[in-house]
Image 1 (spheres, rainbow, N blue to C red):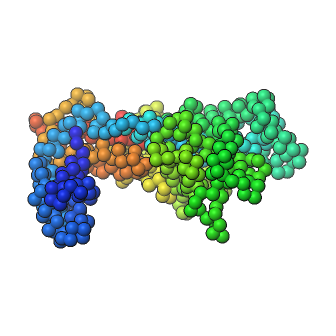
Image 2 (image 1 turned 135 degrees about the vertical axis):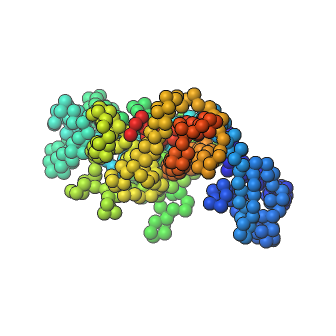
Image 3 (image 1 turned 135 degrees about the horizontal axis):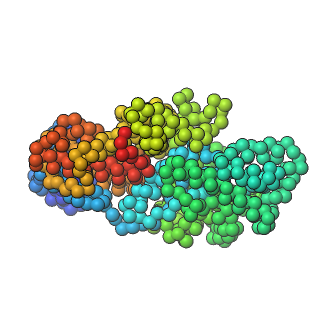
Length: 572
């Protein structure tokens, strides 16, 4: 099948070349959906000044040169081109989409895409702040894999550094068995706080903790054994959270700070020998051009402190070098909080100065906005603590079960549906907002069966399944043909044809909310179709055509929700 917007863009570009010369054949036709036609092209207005002609005159020239097979066009206002596709063309493309296992999603030449996301701190529990980076990153991995790219997940755990001196000593004091059991159960925050209080108030414990750090960094066997156990049991907790969320991260995707530790000295040496880094006030720094502090002096990116220690910048530079040289990345996505924007701008600039990032490799910061409470402030408990992610997800499931409590399901089925609806609601509410925007966490809105919510999309999909269940029809066996006799049929078919382009766009611009908006529009289009166009009771050949539209809608909704990592109950 062919994306209608792409077809129209190509036709208009050909007309531009014919009407005004080939140098205009690559102009963006500025085609957008329109309430007055299927699409509207605004290119005549943008070109009028360059051509020194009135916009409407430019529009008339485009129309005269336009190949109008399967298209009707009219000029409106000062020079807008209203473009309407023929019903036959839309129906033909919908049948092709139904027969395409990829549902019209293009598959360009594969690239290697490294996606850095989730990245919790191994010494602490996952909280609501980890929700967005984890599920936005997971949606991007699913989308890139679906368009055919080779995706390498990287979970950059905070699993190294000086805090592990006090954590290992506290583990010894508590006893290995009890400490590891607590870590596996997700009690990392309390464990960390206990160690911190002892470190701040017990001089003997502080001294032991400080002595433990060089033992860890120097590879002392017993210290490394305790560290490995600490990390192993913490990973069990992380994996439990990932299972609850239904994300695709596993142990094989972990590439924590400890992995890069052996590379840091060499990274500093390479940057210094290349003249990229220099000593400033005892520290080794890179001064990327264009970055200045409040005093208008060049802003340093410190890669080795004056005491010889390394920081986040060193680890991130080591990661870029490894991902380009060893993983052969064409594109690197960092799904990390927006507050780290300046840090990543400077790290990317330093990597370009070093020659590790070049024209063939793109590094991008997919900025993640904050989750807010109803008061408009950071989402926390009443006591001011970060909300544990596991508790948040468990509450979502409990609330979802209350929403469907009166629907007559047996307890086992009800609990499974509640899990799918509750987790799906939380994920969709997050993904449907632009990733760099803040949003207010609101269970009532998330779990609503109306509006742009996960449960609404799940319900729309379950409704389509009920059509085939009631008709004892396997949707996989439906193959058309499709005819478009009613406005709701036509609107649904045209919406379906946009699926491939929207998936491709999400992969290109890293904006999952675009897919959410598309699926919501599709669900609304299907609802209008369902309410005005009987399916099972229709006479042939209308019945077969409407079954085909229903089957195609089901497949697109299921595929789209799967890219978002959202499960769909068989019934709701």
